[in-house]
Amino acid sequence: MAASDDEEDFAALFAASEEGRKRERRIAAGDVIRGRVIAVGATAAFVAVGGKAEATIDLGEFRDPETGEVQLHEGDEIEATVVDDGSRSGSIVLKRVAGRGGHVPGELEQAFAHGVAIEGLVTGENKGGYDVQIGNVRAFCPGSQIDRRRTEGAQYVGQRFRFRITKLEASGRNVVVSRRQLLDEEAAERARAVWAELRVGAVVGGTVSSVRDFGVFVDLGGVDGLIHVSELGHARVAHPSEMLQVGQRIEAQVVKLEPDRGRVGLSLRALAPDPWATAVERFPVGTNVTGTVRRLEQFGAFVELAPGLDGLVHVSRLALDRRVSHPRQIVSVGDTVDVTVVELDVEKRRIGLSMVERARQAKEAGEADELRDTEQVLEQSSRKTTLGTLRDLLTTPSKPKR
Image 1 (cartoon, rainbow, N blue to C red):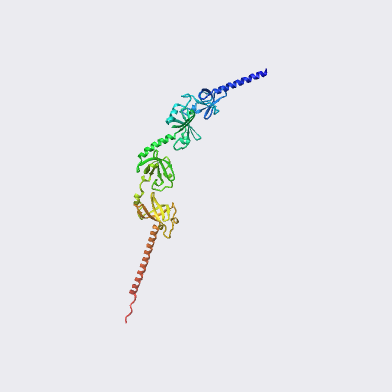
Image 2: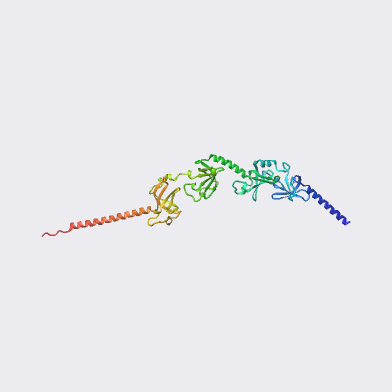
């Protein structure tokens, strides 16, 4: 009798198992079913769909498009469409019933088909990119596609942008978007307008976008112009960062245009007053002035008298008392030196300087003083000698007459 009871219990368990399998087999892709949320994870929720079967559903389906908050909790009952019955993947995947029976909303399909921009909320940053909420659909934006020049990643989270759908697969479970495509197109449109207005000699405004060793790039509104380090000003600079910083607004003059190569040459120096215009008044020949050694060559040393005004001290004018084969024997770059302007040619933009002129003048003045003193002594000595002889003649007693 006991054996008969065991057989009946086993038969009942087997029948229940078979019924469960039949229920599991009845779940097919496209079915609309109801289930209860049994757990909420970081990106997906687990849903009991009957028997021992569990399914997953993306939390993006329940994210508020305005706030980005997930509106789904453990214990909630939901109605969803089966998009993967697990027959191949081993995992049942659901999609919230919305619009067209849980399929991708028609507006996304239309936007993808025609390349129309859509609006989305950046809800988080992940490895490789960003989560973007578009209505009830969660999309992915690669890091390289969030902006034209990517900066600090967290600054995009919580912001709304326009995106273009670049991939739409698996009934909306795989949506990839790009913001950069739209930005590039907008920049290209602005660039065409800017190129149409650019002229050599025109003064244009822009924003410093990059500072390099060789110069500064300026965004003119979709077109990048370059200010070479030599065009930053009349004065020499060790590095462009001494004058300009990224984000700074400036005005510059267009000095070169190469539309076929996309190059625009700019200059700040062209807008600055020419220091040579007042060189004659400031540094006439004979002026003693203090300057800074900026460059050494075999033939002499270049000394900066003022920003944009350099003069040359020829090697023969570096020292008065010895022969100099190279300027480094006397001075070094960065030295402060006293010089005298001995030549000035504004037309050729040349200033001749001397480091020995003061010493030569002092030496010549000393020699002249010494010569005068010597002449005075000799003159006095000569006068004394002459007067003494005459006196002797006058005071010499005459001989008595016989």
